[in-house]
Amino acid sequence: MDFGKAFTFVFDDPDWLKKVAINALIGLIPIVGQLYLLGWGLEVARRVAMRSGTPLPDVDFGTHLGHGFKAFVLGLVYTIPIWVVILPMIIVIAIADAAGLGRDAREMIEMVCGLCAGLILLVYALVLAFAMPAALTRAVVKGSIRAGLEVRQVVALVRAAPGAYLLTLVGTLIASLLASIVGGIACGIGIIFTMAYYQVVMGHFYGQAYLEAGGTA
Image 1: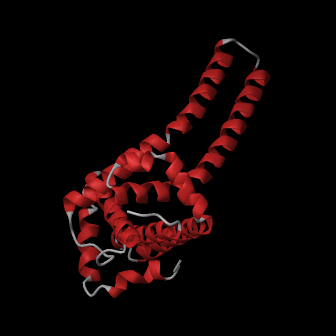
Image 2 (image 1 turned 90 degrees about the horizontal axis):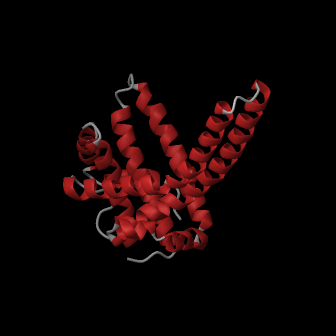
């Protein structure tokens, strides 16, 4: 896995500035723009994973928005377990309040519920940090939301290349930090372009990890 390439591949394209600028501006459209920009990054993941075409895509509104919609749906589905954990805790706390328990008892119940929920959610967040890149890349490579929901295959990808997915996590965190810092230098205006850059860096990492895991079209 070429860690540095994810940060520099953009500049190999002679039209990189135009592509980043135009796609960044599209990303300013409320809601739709954010989905489009996420899909633009996932198109990079698809191209890298399939070794097809120039890694940095030009404008393709329908395709990129479609990728972004897939990511949105997958994100919703994969957060369902969070609510499965949180809702029972809320119900328990509500019952404790309605039962007229003493303040100390209520605080103890709230503390225990909070600690249990926090621990479970922390573990699940770590699992998602590894699984979501694999699920999203699989969805855009296979061209269906269902492919991203096939948990067995998604887990198999992560298990096949845990180091690559760890590097993906680290790389995307670094890219996000750099985008925030560099974008904030120009009175915050630069964040429009650096966040677009972040999306394609993320996509390149996703595609590389998918290849390392032996993913196929």
